[in-house]
Length: 287
Image (cartoon, rainbow, N blue to C red; front, side):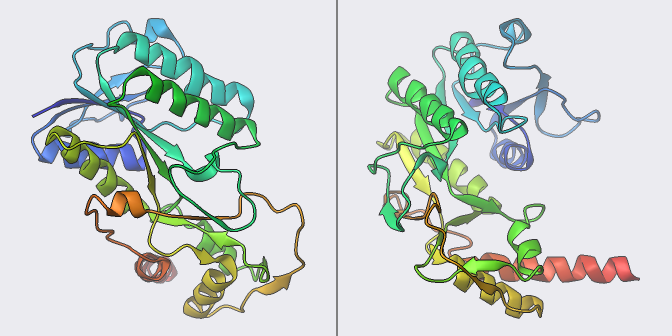
């Protein structure tokens, strides 16, 4: 079994830690403010990765590490603290560790609904995405065994943005279609576990995988379907915005070629469960 470090223990990182611990791995979670009653299977370490001194007591014999951090804000300073200073501090402390970094499909700057995959040009316009892309390259250049996983829009319990938006009768671009790409947070955890299993089994892996469900769908279609299931008014048609950015369709062919099977292959699969959960919570609050 492996000695594993998870840098960033939010909803995905903490669930990943629980799953890997149950599989017999020794898991350490690095977090600025660990849970006060951390008595579960994850051994938490308190540290701020933007400070090299904060990492001085961190073990250096982790064989595997996951980088699953998000900055405090979308400003340049916060992003550099995570994707530049913080990552470099970790790599200096753990030079022999194999890394798996959670990245984002925001690194693609395509705007015309094109299909994108791992080999597509990734030249984002905004500073946040450029720094994520820089961090990807840093990791991949350092060690050919390091892997980057680009998640599309994550949804699930606690990540219900589209549900809230659908209930507000939004104005949505209908033609030409503006595509939305998603992955359920449970599939995020499963993808990370799957890739680690493949790596530990000695399977030859690529350095980059795009993780998004099987159904990149027009936002109009998704929001209309959600409104119907939520018994809300349907969206209204939005005037086409010539400056609309990041309109793309994400291909998961490389990941699927490894025989990964999505638990929620379509937005309909994932959101049906989420809508049921939402209605149950709403019913409980009304009691």
